[in-house]
Image 1 (cartoon, rainbow, N blue to C red):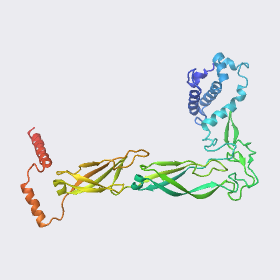
Image 2 (spheres, rainbow, N blue to C red; image 1 turned 180 degrees about the horizontal axis):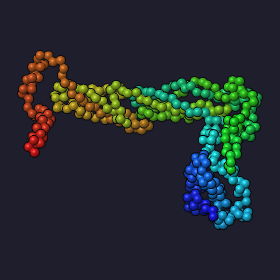
Image 3 (tube, rainbow, N blue to C red; image 1 turned 60 degrees about the vertical axis):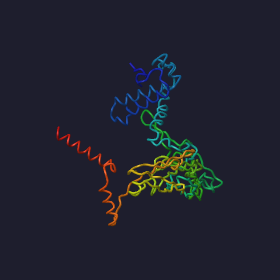
Image 4 (cartoon, rainbow, N blue to C red; image 1 turned 45 degrees about the vertical axis):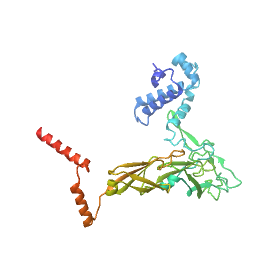
Length: 378
């Protein structure tokens, strides 16, 4: 007794075309003879799956099967032509599943038209943080291909034209029978283009395009971030034999800055200040990316690591009116190469200092002592 087609494919009777195709693809890959060489059971299962899919993918055959079951295709009841169409149907199925693996359909190609989309190009560009801040217009030279002006991209000598491929009839694929089904492959005569050129253009040698370095003007918007990709549609390589051009992708890298580090729209800068400025208080000027100076005031008693926020002095947000902030982190510089008098003054300062002058260090050592005394008593 033949298995129910729906149960065979593991789908419900209400499955849609997409679900039916997905279930069949999965099982066909699993039981394909190439994956199970010498396995008669797998080959039989594979044939059953193909038969079930052939019926259920066709609305009329599926309706007949839903009403009459397998009897719909016996004694000529509603199934006329099924066996005769099986090999052709299986070829379509496997062209969809294994097409690219078998050398069938190829991306970017127009079957029968001889035209092939040009390749996409990549251009790496490095800019400074200042250029990312302000934006810039730059002209770049891109090695690419352009359409041949002598043959207008056809690849054929002026006054002639490509001819339909005699092997595939302009389809770009040829079908070969293998066992109970047939497989379509790329036509070996025209390489899938569907056309042949008997008298190629002497300038481009039948390619329909020529190498050239193109000059392009590129606008880098203010606020652009490291790793951004800019797409210029149609600025890639010219298509083969009059096909559409590919795209150009510009990958941007922002060079590390000597003073500023970037985090999104915010900038960070570390500034060393003297011990006396930190203790007594003071101020200093910082030059920002817009070329202006900003005054930063340091209150007395400032500690290392203290951050000061300068609003709206960071990076602009791409294509928006917002601007990030600048965060300045100070580090206290310990005096070096002291003179005799400086040393005497510091020693005197140390003698008259109290715990109130250094509350963090005094408190730290006091807590450490209490901690270890508590461990010894326990």
